[in-house]
Length: 509
Image (cartoon, rainbow, N blue to C red; front, side, top):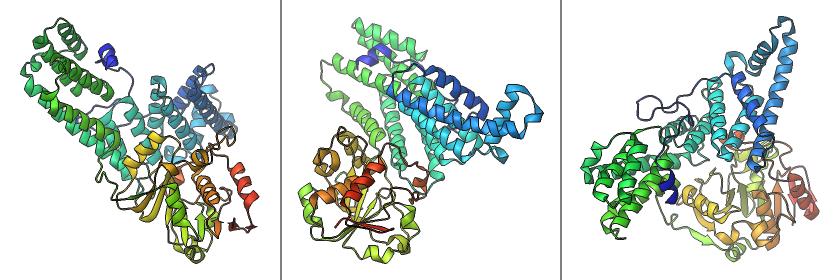
């Protein structure tokens, strides 16, 4: 907790949108921002990133250039449409903003997507300047589209990064009210934050009851905390403790102190108190338990069944035995499938494999799903009952975290273990020098089945590598077809091994 000794507590000024936790007013209230003001802020920020060597900021700069180019096209159209009106650059900027929004101030879809791309990339940077930019963008989107699901999710993620938990919870509530598909695990996240807040409040009330003189030290938290540390260093714990507890209570009530600061300060206090007791933490069992529970729930949400509903874990060898001798079809999430009529043929295979945010329309897609394959980052369809669920992920820790947070007990009988976590890389040993792009869930699964080579019939239905567009759950349709995958290379790999090819079906066996 060294960082806590050096930094905490301190308020963060100007780092978050204007919200007032526990005031009774909406926590996620937006600050109205006009489009032209947002575009100007984005242009200024783009200029600041010209010499950046940070990879994430370089990627942000690319998204900013894309946004400005999209906006410039809108301005150009507005200029041609209203050239006689004159008014100079400011008027042109406002005409461009008006053209970029439809009647009633609704953002055009192209500009909305570009704004959200910048906001999401800014969040990945995690620096204060980029978080402020993400907040401005979420304000802009929600000013024009108050019912934007993507806007409220961006808002919630931004407030979470800024440490405004009350605002985060409400923004996520607004997002959930607008969607039927919780593919991002927001329900669990919100439940975890609410439980965490309750346990934190219990912890602080316990501290207050143990140190009644803390109420006498309710001045500025930074000053009171510094006094407490100084007295501790002098060996006067009797005077130090009420000041430290008083500072913690003040921080918990002051919205200027982000949640991570308060959590670090609480941990620092517990460190100091254990030190005063000569390392004996037995009398702190209840405090430490509350601290651990609030951190755990905030990080992963409540876990209804820590045994994953008696799921049976599958190793690579056990999965091989499960599929041996069976005909298998892999169903793409493509419009070619959605517009087709192969439902009965699909259900006639021994095993039907579907991916990520698949959508069921029985006449077109069939209705059976035996194996659900998903990337760990999203939770679409994890609640749908299947025989086997394989979750793919490149980083072991992130993969385990997602399983703990997103897996629905009882929704699967078998679950792939770590030997099946990342087939192309871990089993095939195809590193970035051999396969430079991130393999898709579909390609990981197809490579695995080809590698095991125990299926007499292995067909791909609707695999046109998104040439016909995506066919997914409604919520997932808002997600772009990501550029981190190399569909051209995957298509070439498939075609090299294809035994027969029709418009709807590619047979590898």
